[in-house]
Image (cartoon, rainbow, N blue to C red; front, side):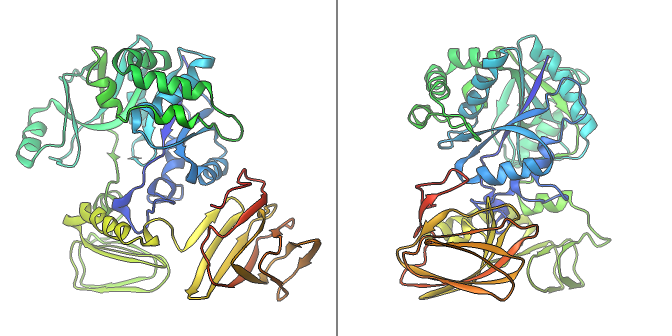
Length: 472
């Protein structure tokens, strides 16, 4: 019996804006410790018998380098599968199941969202071990979280508990109203739907073929015509022909083989700033403070400052989150409504929902320090051994000044090194690139001037990261 963790990392985490953005969502952030939520999820089975050293991560194209870099940082080998487009969880897991079945149809897949917190890893692994016995017998296992309060923000799984063993699922229930949630908790037969599953690869595919044949066929064809390399790219046309559906709706609610294992492991989906406050350490007044923050006469506040001093006086049960380009202030009891603000910003085409001011690239990062009509100032950080694409621009010229480290510059037919306080000018149309073959980060101040300064004003002629010919 072999267990492969399958990590679903396609979410956008809008309720944790402004820290979470569509291009850098919450699962890629270190919200509850030194490691990111993705890294914590990948490490959750460490030390458990039968777990493979590999995992699968299902994510979208835009996050591929961030995912790969974060896994590399914790020395976690992984097969990273790029969804052509999000089609919900059932097709995503089908991709993983078809890939795993090519090697061993009996491989067990432990499906986990990348953005959950589990405090008691031992209890989690014990529940997984119970689930393995049922999954090996051809059952489709879900994990129901023992509820600690009446929660209207979660779906529920109904089952009659029998100690900690796997028991038959009676029903999956949508998010209830308050009175119904209270009845669920007092009744003892309803558990929070964790969104985690365990089943054999072929078992899932057999169920999918029977219960959602169009989805099965589309995903099978998508994997059959995939391209492999650093990332697995399923065929886009085939995958996009698949219906959108969750595992719950497509399979678990319709099968006769669904079992549930109760789990009491300090679980949280960290679905809002209030939920994050609940899982973070707080002081004697219930305050969680992170960054350069001063408070007076505050109780139950969550304040996170990224780039400047934040002060608060006389507040209670309020969340304040400051980033380099945005600040959120929200009552904790309205924390679920942050998505409404994100929707408004998206309607206005605001970039703050997509990108942070500091944007990470496979070669390092850039931070937009100033952006005005006709010019933009950035700070580039190029990692040792990294190299940007060979490129040119149609609308902007660039001035580069090295302020830390050294950089190797290509400009048309020239190649030369720049040290601290040395500079060069890249005219419109010049073919250019920056490389860092040295031992320390290279920090470069870039001043762009032109009539259009969008990130898509780029023609990539060569690229070490598979982006040649793209302008994103």
